[in-house]
Length: 332
Ligand code: NAD
Image (tube, rainbow, N blue to C red):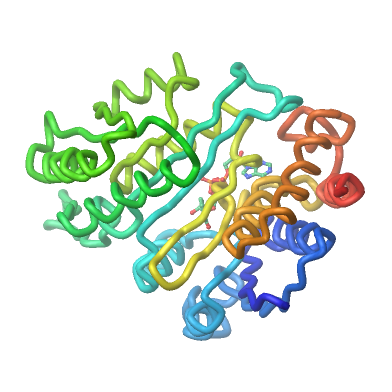
């Protein structure tokens, strides 16, 4: 059988890393029909928006997309493509597995955690305005519905992946109503899963603990802004954004994408495509193609561990294309 997948190359390094993922996934033996749709900076002139309707229509039709990063134009009046996409498809869970890989230079080893971030509200609700000339305000929305939904998602994920501990991250000591409600929901849902250890931690303490003893954590669940920041922090613990995959999950559609942005300053054939390749492996797993997903992940692990072909961000000097070829050659 063939899977229909929307492919959004994106901006900057996006087209190179998605191309790498596409050919690696094809080499894994899974049959995929790609529907390539462009979004981001490059389509603004033609369509008057970085997110034309055909992108949303394609994802709704195929239900699954693999997306490269897109550049968020600053000061142009356009809302972020990512925020708009996540809100309009109600992709409420952003999931980023953060793992140590042998061969990837890092101060730590043995990290295996997942950051689960609420993706539709919080401080990214888009309700922001100027108050006169010298002030501005942004409204943070936290609802019971979205908080319970994301915490439940995190517990179900922990159950499925046989992870034993969940940490809810918040700032309820200061933001008593918003984060207070998030924490209340997290505590309530945790009671439905007595087999999983539940703890909560204030976001500043969590930042310190992640830097000190990241191996102590398994699933971290948190509101939008904290998730955005802590998932990049966690990426820094395992070698950087180039190796952390991700998925934006809704009840109907899923958009898989690397944790990193479009890195516009990188030249061509420099970017590390690992995060996008591993996002593709997550997508195969979602389809139930676990064997193919394993083959892809094992090939990446083998190439990283061998250390002969490492991209520049990991201290090597292998290009995107040559690294991708090495991964394909390592698929068994
Ligand atoms: P970035 O993730 O693009 O880059 C941060 C740093 O990591 C840079 O030093 C970059 O060179 C490096 N880096 C990132 N990915 C890499 C890779 N695959 N290989 C090697 N090095 C890599 O973040 P930024 O610079 O803050 O943002 C650039 C643009 O991307 C902005 O317009 C931002 O809004 C956008 N962005 C998009 C997404 C997305 O589409 N999901 C996510 C984050 C940022």
